[in-house]
Length: 205
Image (cartoon, rainbow, N blue to C red; front, top):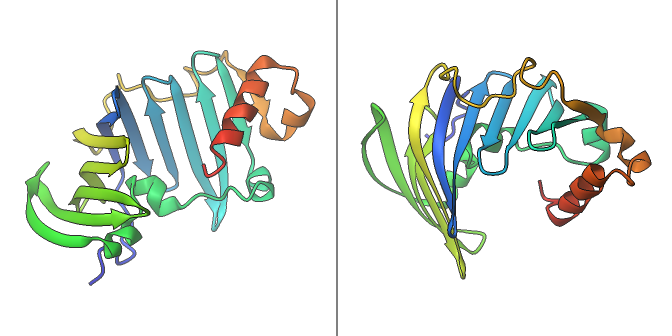
């Protein structure tokens, strides 16, 4: 049996400790059947993907510090060729990649079976403890020359605590809403200019 026998991940809410080099933050994931939301406490940003049907998705980016919301329609996502790898969104690391790593010992973490995987992916050394039922990393370390990323699961729930920083409609009701299709007409807006600059640097998003 392959590690991801097309397992449909169960709905979960997870809080991770994310450390990139010397920067540390809380990072959240809310996973439901057709929506995945993440939040970075340090950046003050939420990303929300919704599967409309088949390979069609809507994407919403919420910038709390700017009180702005950017919406990408399924048509806009297709135009940008920005369709997501849904399994990677849902599980942080794509379950398909487990096949390229060496399966090792197992132990119980968060009340379920966790399996260790090690190896190299795209020039990065990977050390992963994988929760088989939840389809999430209990811990993930990725390192390449001069760079280290560590993701450590701190809390796992079937329903998220109310205090977690989800971008609810109520919370973002007063934020300015921008349709990404209008970016071209808004380049003089400092916020839009900054987002376009960021996207230019991370177009693999």
